[in-house]
Length: 177
Length: 178
Image (cartoon, rainbow over all chains, first blue to last red; front, top):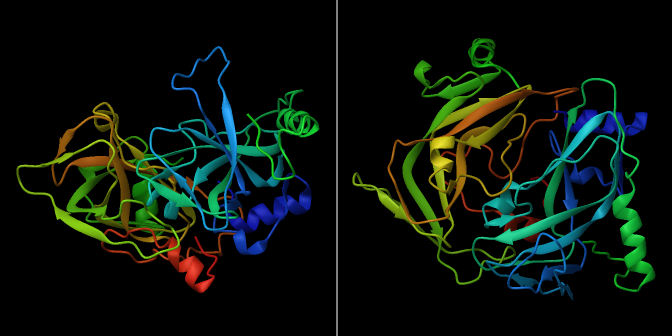
């Protein structure tokens, strides 16, 4: 796993991009990620893996938004990232875990070559509030071993974001599904 | 990730400390940690990260304690650990996970330089009885890549008891550390 200082080095080499970047968010072996002021959640009682699931997008006001158990929320993050030659992972921060906030049911691994905005899938154990710009998660990096295999679909999330934006489904603080 | 033998090598070099240490708890690529008898639950209807939170402590009796779904239990490991030049990571044991017990909600890994007893974020899918001294999880180690001089100086450094989230301190003091 890369140290925080090595994340800085790889940014200089062009292997890692995090925008906007704020050195205060750098940890010994990760970088803290922040949330915008919009969040979405499923409105279906029963989700269907074949699709047709409905979401509602709501604002996170300055005085906080209450997350409740048994609901699955989506939130984009403020930071755009690109990663080459490393495998990016996301995780919640310890201070969030101690509040019972999970930011991913399972899939926290990204792909070597991924370009875009991460999406957190949030669920909570107990009712808990969140606030805009909260440092809720962190990104960390493992070295990729072997010849890199890059997908053609690397800009998938940003493309989807653009589609949603064009349809006025999302604003500058975006959500994708 | 380093092997069990390498964990013992790194202990000799001073990069890893696990106290108390019992060689029978070493696995092929991890070390098994034990549950202490101290649990904490929040005593709030709604948890507000910006505010101080009231909570209550529970001591796990000899006959065990029943975890209920929908509740968040903070617990601690009996072991005090120190880690340098490696990233420590906690994972549940299969035998415990197969009972629907999760031992961390999000951040399974610690920081290079973290010293302390680990706080576990426990929740249960079904009611389940747990006991003190239970071998509850594994600790494993990834070597760090790059300059590792930036050490953990965060809010939980040196914790010996179960610690609730100190996220409110960031809002009070504007501190930026994890």
